[in-house]
Image (cartoon, rainbow, N blue to C red):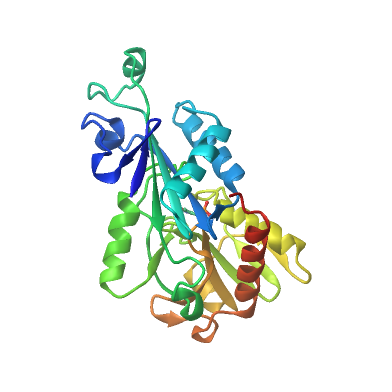
Length: 289
Ligand code: PLP
């Protein structure tokens, strides 16, 4: 595959950054993921806005404009002949002496590294769309700034790997203090009660998902549905009519069991299916190619 690295397109085996890069040494980097269907991207503007916000929260500038990012994403799609999948992008603070205080390094002329690559994935017809996901709930062991999309993903990676070895498709984190569900390893969490679609508020330790926000807007515009921000624990999720997860990669995907216990009779619920259909229709209407 062809990787974008600091203004150039290079073969993946030649895309290299310094071992002194702070992304490598400290997880000092921000990332974004934009999905691709039918060779086009959508919701790229809110993704670029969140990228800029995440960078600002860790005191990094945007290394190029949002428009330049979008242009580059489309070039990554093009050069990799990506019809369906995701474009991953990461911006690190750059390479310098290994010190915890990075301001001195900025003063020393550190330059950010920008990397983008394509991943071919089956998004529209993934097996979990029919069966739903089997999710394990685990203590949220991550840091308290999950509102920032940083590459510090070890908490999610360790927890999801352990759950995968037990046969689960994914994890939902539970706040150890409040016992409320926060978010998934890389998705936002929803339950459905009657005609109300519920997701935890962003005051919880969650990433403000772009898909979450789009689904919120779809629910608010949909006939007969209401959106509510509210916390829920494992028992409330198990008692719910339906549950689902959202992300750039999952779109809207049903959750049919938690900790091995069924939700909505182990079937993807009708409101989940309706929202997924509306989400994909909306995406197809807004494709940028
Ligand atoms: N929560 C976490 C921790 C994530 O990593 C992600 C995406 O990767 C999401 C939620 C969903 O966000 P989005 O819908 O913007 O992909």
